[in-house]
Amino acid sequence: MTPRGTPAPVGVLFVCTGNICRSPTAEGVFRAAVAAAGLERRVVAASAGTHGYHVGEAPDPRSIATARRHGIDLAALRARQVEAADFSRFRYVLAADRGHLDRLRRLAPPGATARIDLIMAFAPGQGDELLDPYYGNQDGFEVVLRQCRAAAAGLLDHIQRYDFAGGGDKG
Image (cartoon, rainbow, N blue to C red):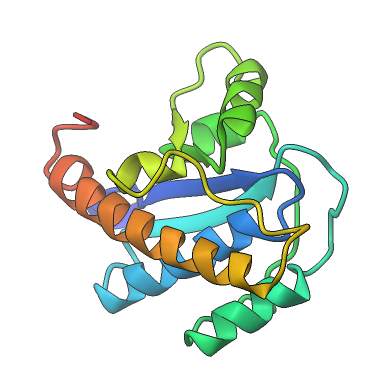
């Protein structure tokens, strides 16, 4: 609990390889959904990479430009690497693809409390993994943003139904 008896915010960490394309896009899109729902005090989001290739760097310029076209600002985000404390700090640690999911499960320390899952688990019928746009053209970044919107809507609905209801994660 936080001061005055209010529950601690539900934390969500989005993870990809270097934290410059998929995970910052997922973070930005989810934050926008949280803000649109007026839940900024109840839900927090961050992103990280499984590898430290880009620590301290801004998201890929193509991710920033795509998000900006959709009214989402990623420019202030900076890449960081997943750390052991994240598995207790966040309620959800969500991977862009199965490779990340496997790595996160191996990185999770004993006693980790986070639900480790795929981002797209919250967007049934939209595919299992986020497309990796890094080596492709601009269209891939648009696809990722659309995928992230679908996942953000499903995840926010899930959090409101299960975490806010006090029953914990049922899904």
